[in-house]
Image 1 (cartoon, one colour):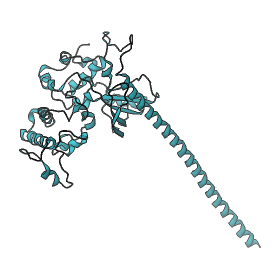
Image 2 (cartoon, helix red, strand yellow; image 1 turned 120 degrees about the vertical axis):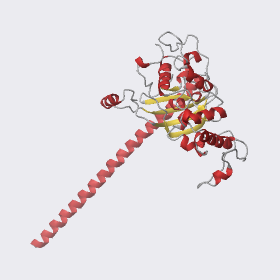
Image 3 (tube, one colour; image 1 turned 45 degrees about the horizontal axis):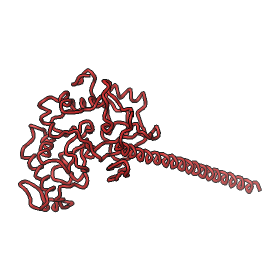
Image 4 (tube, helix red, strand yellow; image 1 turned 90 degrees about the horizontal axis):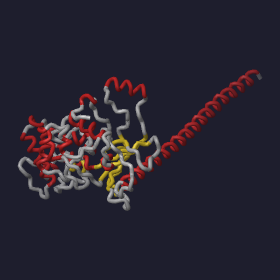
Length: 357
């Protein structure tokens, strides 16, 4: 009898252990399910906020094409000069007329601030290639080889130019394809399929520097991305940072104001590339605010005084065409994880500015 009672006690104990394990596992599963539901709800809420911000950004662009109300107060410089509203679409964080949630950041880039691959003259492409290969130190033969490959890709025939590349070359690659033979590229990244260009633009944020949309042939320095300016002949890092610092204070109205920053020799190289045009093609970026904490950012500033407080590098984006205030924008491209252009403010101390305040 004692043995039977002992066996029963052991069975009861093991049963209790098993029940405890099962209950614990079920409780953990319930907690995990509840946490998943909450996380899904949070994600859905944030997505709805992002999509709302996209619509508000589109509305901002449509309103930009409306006649200005009489008596509207416009932004002014410290000297009292009226700033051009359309020039705020240069990637700065925007305050919209219909603002989104406080934790959402909206940036808009006018494509007049990018190099248009579908409108670039052959001579300008040559100058761009030369700069990427070292400027005056560039090998003339290498420049011509890459330029010939560009010409063959964008011409309308299969005739291979001198040192160029046509159908036979591309079809014999490991993963062969045929050249476009059309001056209109379909996407910016298509340039990487042209012989020599993948190496030429290694490390470049192509979508930040280039566009294939619209008819602009020049780059507006008020709107230019840092990535586009880095490719322009006549500009170096110091000049680029001064241009960004200048336009943070006031608009660049004409070439004489460019000359306040850019030396004459550099301006001669730069002049064929720049204009005062704006476009109706825009990249809209919206994302949840995510900045470095105060202590972490203070440590970053000690290492680099021009550190960017915004830690976001990828964002939801759309490329849209806005033709008027009574027509909905035409969407050309959507990317949930588009790489952001460099959003850092001008990396130059006030005492090092090349222009007068």
